[in-house]
Length: 559
Image 1 (spheres, one colour):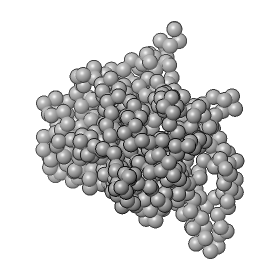
Image 2: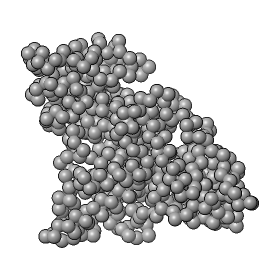
Image 3: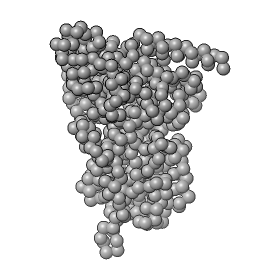
Image 4: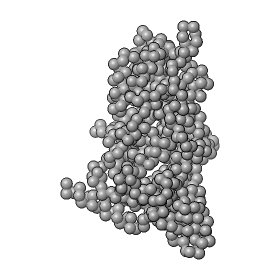
C-alpha cells in the first residue's frame, strides 16, 4: 500500500477510479481507503475507447463487453443502495486525463485506484502515476486484482520465474513468511461502512455529470448474448453465489478428479468474476480455507486442520488435497500475470525465440481459410472439438480441458498460429484475460513459459473417450450425434452405414460446405441430421506437425 500524504485541502472530494479488475465493494482497498477520507467519495468508471485494429488487446472482446455492461449495472445498483452513485465517463484519450478533468469539475483533492505498487506498474500505469504526481493531487494505488505484485516473487537471482512449480513453491514460502503479518498479501479489506456524498452549500446532493450506461455501447444491436444470459449472473452477488455453489454443492474434495470432466460441474466457473474483479483472489482463498477448517471440525475422528502450510502438507486429507489443487490454480493465474508483466511482448509474440520462425500453414487473418472457419464454427468433424467450440459460442465459456484440446487441434492438427486462436478466445470468452489467454495458448503451442512440448499432440478421439466417456458433453452440444452408439460417438466416421441410417445421420464434406455459410454460423452444417467428416486425419496431421517442428529446429541450428 502506498503512503498517502493528507494535505490541508483533504476535505475536498476523493475520486475512486474503478477499473475492470475491481468492480466490487468488498475487499476493495482503494474504495475502503477513500471511505476514510474526510470529504465526499466519488466512485468513477472511465470507459476508454480504443482502436481495436491498432490496439487489439486494449479493448475487451464482444463477450467481455456484455459481462462488463452487466457488472457495471450491478455495481451501480449496489452503490445506489448505499446512498452513493457510480459516475460513468468516457475517454478517447487517456483515462488519467479524464480523471484530472473530472477532479477539476468536482474540486477533488485526491484520486485512489487499485492494481499497482510503485516500482512494479505496467507502462500505462506508470504514465498515469506520473501524470497524477504532476497534478498536485493526493493519490494512492493499491493492490487488488492479484495476490502478489509482479516483482514480489522472484528467483534467487532476482529474475522472474518461467517454470511454474518453483514459482508455486516460492509463493507458498512467501505466504508462510508473511502470514498474519503487516505485509500479509492475503489480508482482506472490509467493505466501507459509509461513503460520504457530495453536497452543495445548501446541503443538496451535487454529483458530477455521468454518462448513461447504455451510451457506452457495450451491448450489440442484435441480442446474440441471450444464451449467455441464461448461464451467468455477472456482478459481486453472482460471484458469491458461484463461490458458495462450488464449496457447498460440489465441494473441493473431489476437485482433482472431477476438474477434467467437461460433462459435469467439477470446476468453480469463477474465472470471469475474477477477471472483472467481481470477487478477489483473496476472498476465494479465505473462503476455501474456511471451508477446509470447517470440514476438519466436522470430521470427528480427525484433528482440526493445521494452521501452517508445512503442517497442512504433513497431514493431508481429501479436503486438503482438493483445496490445495484448487488454490494451485489461483497461483497459476498469478504466474500468468507476472509473466505478462515481465515479458509484455508475449501477448502476440512467442516467449521462445525459435518459434518466431515456425512454419505455420495459416491463411492471412483478413481472409481466414476454411479450416480456421470450421474450427471457429464447431464443424471440424471431431466431436469433442466441435462440442467445445459450440459451448464457447453459446455460453461465452469453455471447460479448461477442452480449451487445451481445441488449442492443440488448431496449432498442431491445422498448423494455424496460436495467435489466431487467442484472438478468437479474446472475442468470445467472458473470462478473456490477456495474461491467462496468452499463457494458455503459448503453453499448448509449446512456445511459452513452462510449455508442453510441441511434440505432445493430443489425439482428440482418445481425449474424448477419456474425459467424456459416456458422451454426455458431446450429446449436449452436438445434438445431431445424440442417437449414435457410444462406441461410434467419439469418431462418427467409423460408424457403419446401418448405424448412421439408424441414427438419422449423414456425414458431409465440411470444408466445401462451410465456405458457403455465414461467418458466424455455428452448429450443424446443413440441418440437424448432418455432421462433417474430419477436416484432417489425425495420423497425417501428427506427422505434418512433427515435420514442421523438426524444420524449425533445423533452421534454428543453422542460425
